[in-house]
Image (cartoon, rainbow, N blue to C red; front, side):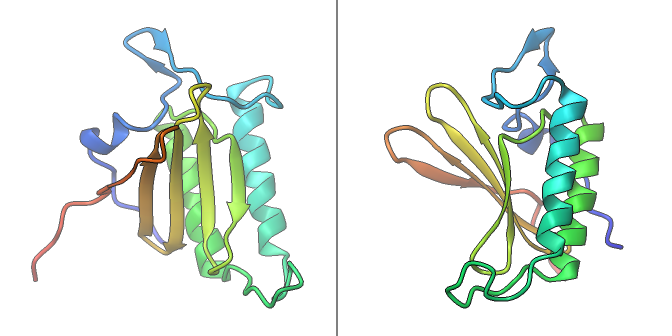
Length: 142
């Protein structure tokens, strides 16, 4: 199993925390009664994704590999421990990736795309269609 590096405080400010400065962050997740229930549903979605077979959508789409699903599961546990609200949706992508998606009432969307062990992208899109990628890790020079 892969351990994810800690996200910086700059990254964490973009994620919907359970409470920031005593103020609850508003994220759309209507099917969840609690934070624990939301994360349980996200993990259950990951377990279901793990059971998919190639061509799961009838269009030849590859299944996310076990490594990708395991990485997403570890990341979900880490995010929960850091106080991040559960995502509005946990989905498989069409490129063998896994997505955590948070949606706000103003139609802002935050998508965390897990592409492999310690490989992820965080993208924030606003209602007007503007999207920006938020760097997760500092660049390392070898």
